Image (cartoon, rainbow, N blue to C red; front, side):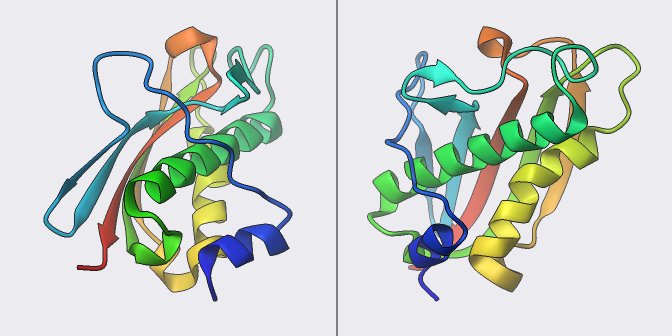
Length: 153
């Protein structure tokens, strides 16, 4: 099934690709890999989720933040490739969770992104991953993800 059709069935629409917030580009293609810069949970130029998990955010709302990051990543992928059908596999996801000291549930938060990728791409959405708690993210965001994808030649 077309990934964009699957997104619509899940009740999601791709947002406009978020603008770069510094001296970098949103994606870089090398061979059959597409490296995606870190994305935040943004919508219409504003954070959807701010503050650390364990204080302003819960694990559940943190997972929604990670899902928003995944949608922004997919928007950048579509802008780079023209279609999400060009994705043959999600290879690796690095997830960062803005959290209170001692927070140990980063994997549950980043599941918000991982689960979306699996729902949209099926087996090809299963990926290797790191989920790391940090004491701060750009703009005070609750989560940030970086993604590496394999793309069709």
